[in-house]
Length: 105
Image 1 (cartoon, rainbow, N blue to C red):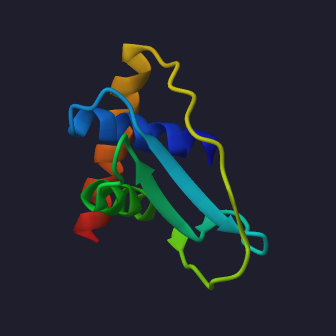
Image 2 (image 1 turned 90 degrees about the vertical axis):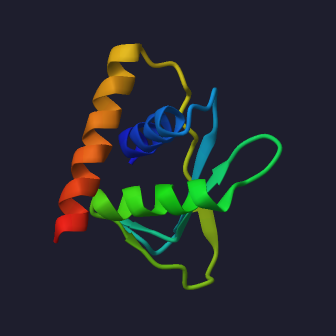
């Protein structure tokens, strides 16, 4: 999951020409594997809904199930942001490929 969070973060930064942002992923204590409760994108000073929706779609394209049953959740760590340009390009390509495939199904 940590790699997916970083890849979605790097993809959003590139897609929207941002300097930084955080992708917050919530998971219920009962969820396992590729099940998550929700995704929120945080930027300073706001939390733009369009970025959160894009992140939501990216996680669906990566094979996650997103279901919030309103039970207790915990958050996964943010992407640390220490990535090379090469890693950012790989992340961008991976997410774009997943989205194209997901949208064509």
